[in-house]
Length: 409
Image 1: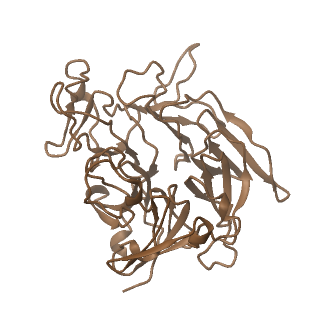
Image 2: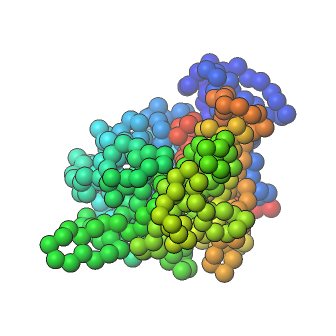
């Protein structure tokens, strides 16, 4: 990264690593990120890229049929394209495809159309004679505010899936679309788990009880849908007790049609491998026994977001059945956690273990108290496998797209 595009740097050398310090913030040098042997992280796009100043709050990614990377810039309301025509592992430039959107996050291609999930709707854009059309309404009236960022993906069953986060930390929602994953046809019609008969409008709700499931994908062998989920903040394991930073754990859920995943009344106990009740926000008696337990859990408040399977990478065979999850990082833990990529290991097509894959964006993970800005060098958001079989990672804190490739032993 050309840090001079952002600020006048002061360089300090600590334990062999180079930190560029300014405005109480650090930016990661490529050497700072620790990876397993044989892997290499480089910056695919940053402030030094042509029109790199457009990279702001970069969130979710998708590749088109020609291998071009698209990414949303949520705060700026844009969709950006980052071509790499010479295939050198670095974006040639940053091109604005759409602008004036309402906090866009998710994007997916359906044929030659690009669908973009705003906080209040989904819009469609197309490329006609080399130019991108204005955004057209596609799915309307999605709940706004609260956890406003929405992800949209085309599933292997040919349906569209959209997450809608909760409006609050812990509450009873008045809008049934909140804290769900929705399903629609590729024509934008609701296609939820329950078929509605008669004059009632078909529901779009596919699964519920999901506080904020921004990242989801499908297992390449079984076709099972897996979604990350962020647990509630400031919870206690006793009635009126002190906040416990170690609860609730974050979840990776296998999403099944019509299932309820516990929020706001329940969360998983990784030791008991069962759902337990929030003592300070109880549901109906026995409710948590009916809630769907997660497939596996992550450390509390690490904010898992993007997830992708690794079957299409050129990585070693032992990685091909596994997934990578981006942990965006905690905001209120006394002991900061997250700010990394983790590998979810699968056995017999089921997740069995979580281990570190890429670390180093948290410069001083041992410091207690409120997380100081100058401890953080980046916050991974989304992960996607490119047509070159490398892994791409978006970072909305440093406004960078990373590329992780396997170089061999």
